[in-house]
Length: 255
Image (cartoon, rainbow, N blue to C red; front, side, top):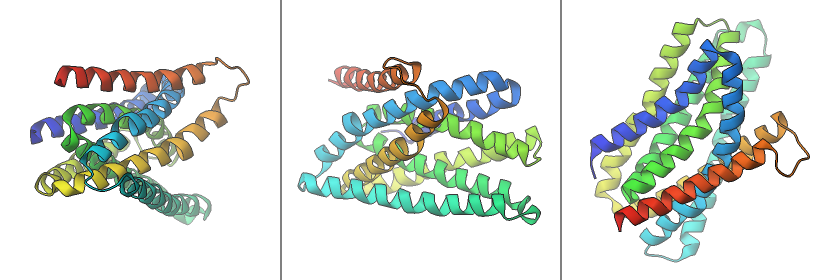
């Protein structure tokens, strides 16, 4: 395993997620289309990464029973639930507390995004430590789920009066949290292999929570439909299928 490969992987993941926000600054219609496509695709990709990738790897590294892996997954869900409620309280409080908070809302958005990016780096790094191919697949799933969020954040920062250059620079520095967190986890996890299994299970719980509580509800809200085969449904299946096939191909190449 090579630290430079992990740095490149986490940096690419950050850049992919930033493309949505940058696109909003240049072409709003295209950005909305990308958000629509990436949301459904990301939900399928995240869920597939959890059940076909992260949890199986966590089980293979665990020297205990499967209940230990499931327990850590539940801890991941609970931890992200508490963290997100705190961040959303800050967001809601500063958004509705009057003109005096107009200057603090953008800062809270950037801080929240930075924390989110750091968590992405942790997930990517532990997946990479388990297996570089797992790290690649996890990065794909994580990057796609970040695209709609980045578009929303860029839009809110524009609405708050920030200039385009300032928005891009702030989000680039925020995205560096992914790389920094990934590097820290790499050096810790490499010398403490016993942490890999619970960390993968924890990451699986976090990604599952994101997919089910954030990404899918936003898809249902923005693109309601009664059709069985609408674009959102097909993109969800496509996201899951792409991740599944990527995992299978990676294992074949490794074997």
